[in-house]
Length: 247
Ligand SMILES: Nc1ncnc2c1ncn2[C@@H]1O[C@H](COP(=O)(O)OP(=O)(O)OP(=O)(O)O)[C@@H](O)[C@H]1O
Ligand SMILES: [Mg+2]
Image (cartoon, rainbow, N blue to C red; front, side, top):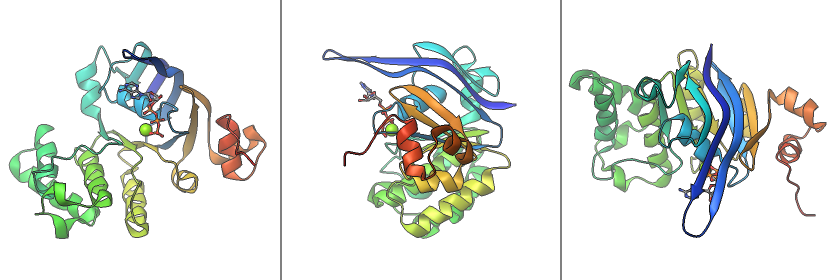
């Protein structure tokens, strides 16, 4: 079964100065249990697409479904199956690290005891136990991101969206996160965005390239290589994204 189905999704932002079609007819699917990478240049539309998939913003067109539940007409069911670690981390700065985790677990229906247990498990998994009682607002950027990822995974979603999860993480934290993501794979599908191409290559079962609001290619690393006729993955990506480096 597909964890996610996106058909012709469209999102246009309108403000007084300009109109931007951030997502312009994007289509792809994610298999259950898959780690799926969404790659694209800055402004390609990745975060907008993810926000639509998680019900944070409504699509202007097309159809998005999560485990066959429509993201608009069955929004509550679809939302209950997903969670997101947004690009702009959304932690409550005045709560402690542990309280942030507990708070999210409680919102998703865990009782106090279960929420505490889940928080402690997540603190260990993310190597944040030492900072459990510090105010989240006092964390460094990388630690804050780790907490945000914990908040996305603590609800045990069937499908988690991690928007640039490893941005600003040190090399150990990055490894730990990769381990955590792989360990979750059995019961959680993951969609992640990253600008680190080697990371996408190492971690993702399949990768989609997005450019100007559209998905331009989807496949395994091998498939993308043969599709683009390139072997160096940076070149593969640039070609599929329709970009080139100035000499
Ligand atoms: N709230 C908004 N209002 C108006 N325009 C927006 C808004 N959010 C995003 N955009 C515009 O939509 C386009 C796509 O943005 P988006 O954040 O989805 O890209 P992205 O692929 O996630 O980029 P990055 O790699 O930099 O995170 C950009 O042109 C951006 O400026
Ligand atoms: Mg983004």
